[in-house]
Image (cartoon, rainbow, N blue to C red; front, side, top):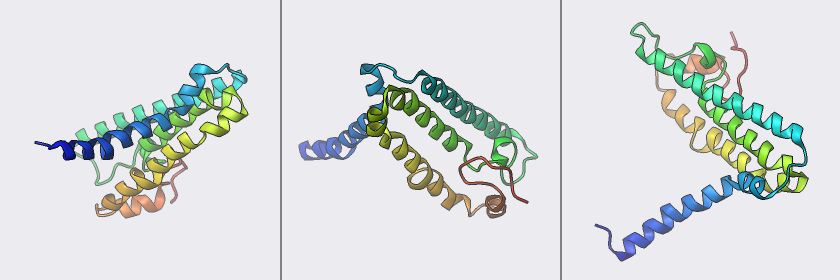
Length: 163
């Protein structure tokens, strides 16, 4: 059981950090809640980008689940979206955050866009370089066939597979 000092430490190191992160990442949504839309075309572009991200995450998950159920599968999932990017889920998640920013931040004006662009940039940084793809790559490189897969497949942005 946590003592009083242990509870305070948990609150400071976990809950306060999470609360600040949630506040920061949600800035484009908060700006949209109190601002008028100035550029409606950006709302549509952002909604399409958000939808592309959602589709990437959903299809990537479905393809990975089907691969895991296949008893004749190879050592590495390299079909469908996974042939174009090693991390379709992370790419899709980044698209979702940039779509939210376009709709909530930039569509309300240049100043709100500039003040909130750090939110999707930070999410993309974490998805690609900090806790997401890079971290997963370290352990995946130990698997049979993964280094060859990595050599022919884009890590993040979907690109045609290299031969």
